[in-house]
Structure formats: C-alpha cells, structure tokens
Image 1: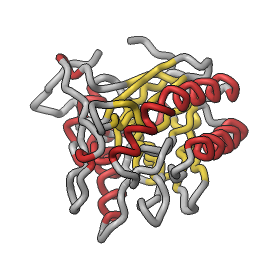
Image 2: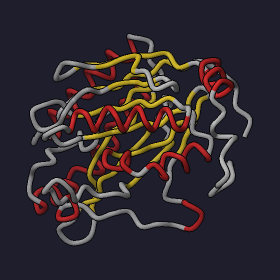
Image 3: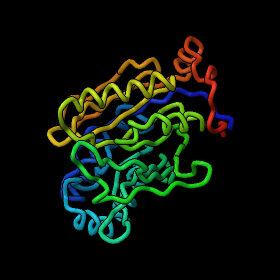
Image 4: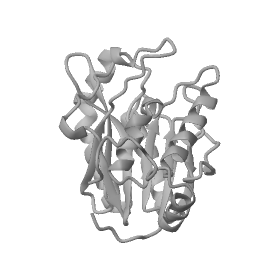
Length: 275
C-alpha cells in the first residue's frame, strides 16, 4: 500500500471510566477539544473509558446494551466536529451476561476506520476478566487484527493485556503498523507499573516502531500513559489523573532506527507477509 510519508502529532489521554456514561463522554469531549487545540491529529483514550470496569458483569452487560450504540455515535460525532481521529474503549453487547471489550476508531471526518474486540482477557493476578467479557473469536488470516491509516502513518490496535503477547504486536507490524496504539486499564498491583512500562518499551524495541499507550489513572489502574520512540525511549508521559501527553511521530525517525537496527529484516521466521 502506498502511503504519503508525513509526520503525525498524536496525544494519549489519561482518564478514568466512571459509572456515569454521560459524565465520561463529557470528560472525553473536553480532552478531545484540548488535543485538537494542541495540534493532535489523533487522540487515544483508555480501555473501558465508557463505563466503570469494576462493575458487575450483569451491570456492564446492561450498560453495553443500553448505552453502547449511543456512546459510539457520540464518539463519531465528536471526531467529526473536532476534526481529529479518536480511539476509545467501550463495551458492546455480548452473549448473556457478558459484554465485549471493544476499541473503536473514528477518523477526523467521522468515518469508522477501525474496530477491535479484545483477544486476550485478563485472567491473571487473581483477576478474571472472562467472568465479565467474552474474548474475540480468531478469524482466518488474522482477520481479528485491526490497523488503520491517519495522515500517512499506519496504526495497529492493542488492548491492555495484549501487550504480554509479543506475537500480536509483530503481526500488526507485519501488516505495516508504524505505531502500536495501546488502550488500557492496567490494573494496579505489586510491580505492575514496572511490568507496564517494561512491556511497552519491549514492544517498541523489538519491533522498531512507535508505541502510544493510554491508561486509566490510579488508584484502580497504574496510569503512566506514554508515547515511546522506536528506540524504546519514552518521549512523552502523563502523570496526573486527567491529562494528555503529546508527541510528534516522524517517518524519518522510524527509518533512522530501522537502518541502525534492521532486526525486522534479519528475522529467520516470518508468520505473515505484509499487506
């Protein structure tokens, strides 16, 4: 696929999803406006920013059925009105008392450009996400993976626990992703901040790509939303409970790192060809 090489300014948002969908949308709107004023062409919000992920399975499923379509329409309209692409975490209706943990992406014109249902559910550290959400089914030729283009750069979507599975990030990069977008509610716990940053940096280093990670803030999640250079260096970070971190992503930097460290071309194993 031929894509014009442009630099892209992006923002990662640090924001908690609370029990009031309307209040969450109002907070999202405020940060989208701020991101647009800051020159961002894309803003990424956390996993489950639509609604409180600590609620019961029954409550989340009910909210997904009642408010899911409205939330998605609101994000679409917000992207169009603000002229900025948006990625946000929501809940969609699943089977029975389960919901789908879904990332949606809308372009600056309001067109749907991506949709990803979480593949790896967080059944770890004494937590069982599978009691609330259903995993996405696998599809032929990795059709469950999601990439999209904004201003000449290709972005690949990942959701929280996904970053512990390096094969997923590599497949997205094989599909041309220049940037891995990670939306998360990375649950707080012993050494979890260390895991979060280390894994994000590892995904950037091993794939020589940018990583932009948006996380819900403490106390329920670790925060530390950040944007990471293809060399593994964090170049922007959010420290507060509700804020944005900005970075300009350059194709020239991507090429520079990959020329010095051509590990993608040195591979002896290849799973899928680039599209």
